[in-house]
Length: 204
Image 1 (cartoon, rainbow, N blue to C red):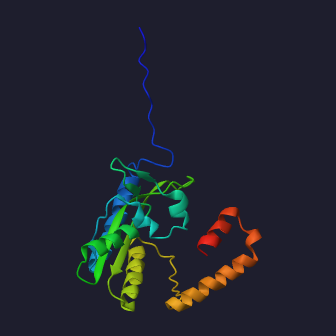
Image 2 (image 1 turned 45 degrees about the vertical axis):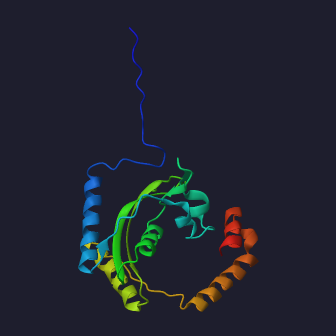
Image 3 (image 1 turned 90 degrees about the horizontal axis):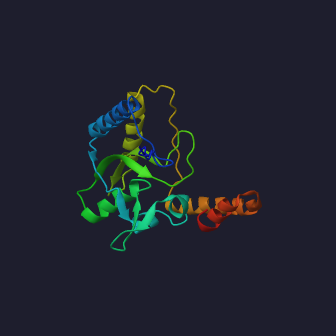
């Protein structure tokens, strides 16, 4: 009698199964997040897991996420698509496509994928919770989102949390800051790794 050989499949490298009791803790964390978002008047948006590659290229072709870590491929109708490496770009694409009433205040929660080197506690699939307030130029919305994040951490029972607020100022200030960073790093570029030198050239 020949013994039938069974193939033992396992999760792919960098992927994982989320089992109890971790799955329950994950669900409770999301529940607390949603509660705080809805109290602040934010509503759920669910962007697709797959997007046209161009949606993420607009985020920054020089970033490591786009150049090294994104799962992208050509599908059966020859469209270049990508598994989302983060959710903000898809939310902004949805905003532009659907032209909702302003301000558009939304929250999202979902799994993303990046082909990076797996490490302890760091996987190629990960969850992201976030909010976006789009369509109006109102500093009060920035304050609202910062406050929302602070209340969310408190709802989880976190007590040793320090809130630090910083700003790069106006667009012109950011340009000056970027140039100062570029000049400093150019003076020390041979101390940088090869990958960091490429990033400096593309996107300081």
